[in-house]
Length: 542
Image 1: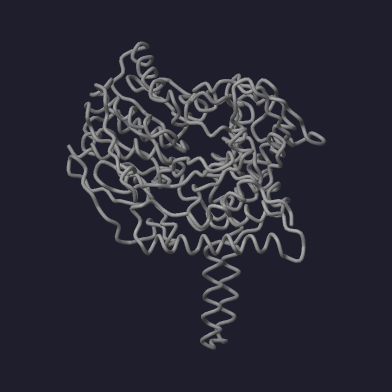
Image 2: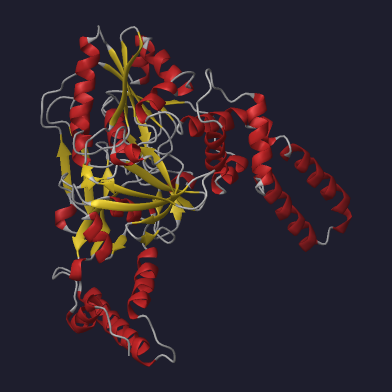
């Protein structure tokens, strides 16, 4: 029998004693003990008696992954390597390599670089495909595990192997982790007379201080009576920072968010603790479908208290709270323990993972009331007061993202064009080039209309309506003709997405954020609202 990993042996030894907290119901207690004992016996039997040698640790990992996969995407097990290299610390003393990563087109890629950070100084680029992190293959790592591997003791080294368009073989980097410097605010500028702009990329340890500093800086540079706070694409972060940021605009002691879970310790309320910095400043909070968690807390609180106009698209809808629990032998479990609720009492969470339901698909959603009496809906994220965007993501765009076409085309463009051309724009020729590239990569997708035609064909066949075959064929041909026009039909969104992807290969984070403001329809709408005080007050229920 192959030797079992130490933490696995501990699991088997403790199985008969395992039990939930004392407050659990007797039935739950019995079920946990029964199933834990069954699992331990089954696992030991497989590891010791299966016909072929069994990798006991790999088998356990598979079982853990399957078990956690039944819950939600945020409940994750970290093995010893991840907790050692990443340190899973919330103290702010953990070092980083100065890069952001995410899954794109089925690969783990670099999506952002800290200006003058370790990765940028060594030559890592946005768009690089990560092959190895700290000696571990990137294949099989999810976003969370990869990000934890990037973290570690300041001064420690991190080995990184990447693949880059136009380069033969893997590029090897040895990065020295630096103490994590907060660069959460990536743009501070003036958009129009008296209207400032601050872009916040994430919520880390100094986010509130950076936003406060941004407001002070804008005031010093001239008179300011309105602010655009841009939270688009912000995935969230630390709850306390969200509370502090709301506290810059509302009276001391104002409720911001509450959490509710199964145990008493997860039921908490959070209120602002300081006197506001800008109690009279008109505010527009910009959000989109990637604004999540702490971003939604800020937007939801500002909306519930009628303190700012929310502009953009409905947010992601991540209203689940996670904590990290140490596990035996240096492992750890990040688990969901409660849900977020805005001051009006509405849930932020969109997806019910236990039921497999999305609140946005439910016709009748619960309604709540803001301080001024406006009606807002619960579940499904935060809906904007002023909805504006480039429209819903089309089947074509989703397919292009899924296969990584934007990513790879931008990488190719950067490899072939070392310097960003003056006056760069996505003109018709470049968009056609992108289309040829995507189609050459085997782009294949089905539209909603095609799926409806398939359903109609199936219904006709079941009913025995063979006489409609010619009409159905004509319908399919018409749908195919329309589909051929998808690139032209959805050109505005495709241009915007491709422009951002290509610019990110050349510009530092702050420069990129400022460049993307030009012609931004959401920013333009925010300026319209903030520039018309009567309209602003009307939207807030005054």
